[in-house]
Length: 280
Image (cartoon, rainbow, N blue to C red):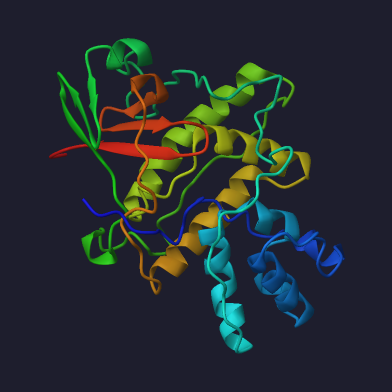
């Protein structure tokens, strides 16, 4: 099966906060042609339509091209190809040392609190067969991004919201934080499938670290994710989407976790794969 580049590679745009106006015009030590174009557009007055410099850098180059595309067109500028970004010395999304997110707890899903099985047990009789996971309960197929004609009629409407609740606990309570993020992630993945972006989801690691990055900066994680979800719907109404943007597949079921009875998610921290039960 052919897999093309997807314009929404890293999945969370981390749109800019109202405080961004206080930042320098371009607070980047430019490393790529895309970052140079970003700075050129900021200098031309496009800052209000773009993420903050650090939020821009956190995105995959394919997403950076998407963000720059419309502002560049307004100024008659071309958008350079999305060359692979250089690896930073320390990743902005590196796992928090006090709470390594790679081992996600088996939280209960709101609509089936008593029936969700233990993650290890639920996958112990399954087989990973490339683009499929075969289990006694059925077969799961790797999700593609979907064209809008294949979505529910109201999928991209304003009323379709992500609907994450704000975190109200103590952020020093690691158990409470991970429980909150686990439940939020269990809502996020089906929501992304619902708008046809199953191949453009965040890994739980990125989700976990986006929470800490935003909350550390005084930004409400749930509100920012809702705004990002709104922007994804808005862009998907008018911009084309390709099925997938890479050729990689999971190495094994040790990288996989159950979201609900219809969805299994696998990741290697950097890359996320969503498998959906066939015939659901």
